[in-house]
Image 1 (cartoon, rainbow, N blue to C red):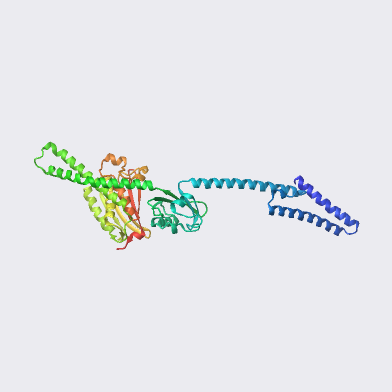
Image 2 (image 1 turned 60 degrees about the vertical axis):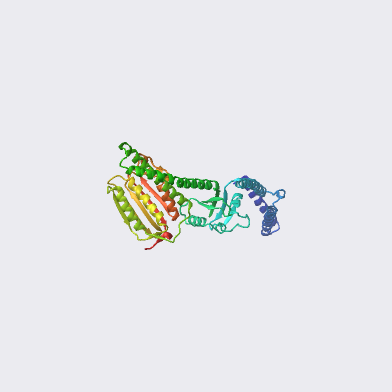
Length: 432
């Protein structure tokens, strides 16, 4: 037992013994002991009163001195309060620094709760989204930003579906574009990060317009060149030494024509919004046609199979979906050796539709799969085999699927083949 409490124990015991002795001298030991206990109780109540008064007033100079064990108790409380004040000042400084840094942060940040109600926002977010600090606190963020893409992104975030970010025009009605991303933030909260991507969008739009305009301008001279090469190829009087060069020029002109057509298709897809739900596209019929074309292209050297488990169609644009199937099947045939197999599948369930093109071809290295849908990107194996193509097929597939609210999943292993799966949402399906 500490020395202080030992001394306190003996002091209290001495007081009680003295009171009992005095009471015994007057033939009333009980009353003597009772007086002693009462005196000690009053002494402790007095110190408790002083302690409560000091804690209630909070004045540093009002701390009582105390006697006995109370002096140590009061001293420790004083030290604890001093440490708390010091920590509080440190936390206040930290909060001020964080607040200053968020004000200087160029990207917007909006903290929302689990119901997407605004808890706090920084200055950049209020400027980009037109928020008011006090007025909009507690308001659902999708009541202020009503763009369908953003609302759909929030619903997907609530359902934990995979979508990294969404790009929307500014809700202020200007020409600005914003990138929005939801991240977990603390307990039952999320952080909406908002970034101004206007410059990138404008640059991308300029690039797209340039490609589209250049492609349009190239069509006319290329048509003239191809026409003359057709005439020269059919000319019986053409010298023999010119026939091979003319054939090569004709093949290159055809390849350039295919490139221009793909560039125009891609530009059209990039510049248009999501397609409507008005037209039903017969996916099984498209797959059957794609199989016939694949058999002709492979000249019967590959096994082309259909695996259709559903008669459902897809609501969308037939030409775009035909382009998706054609590009995927053409790539599968192109990079699958003779005696290999290509399987074209279509199935549906309660979650949507799944269009699959699988092959037993050369496969794709894992580190190159994320880049396959980039424009003009080709794997080394594709370059070595010189299978042709424009390098835009999978980029067209990605944008055409995006028009139908669908996603492309790619799985592949070198030497064992590849599988391309197009996921269509349930609201895009149409019964036969």
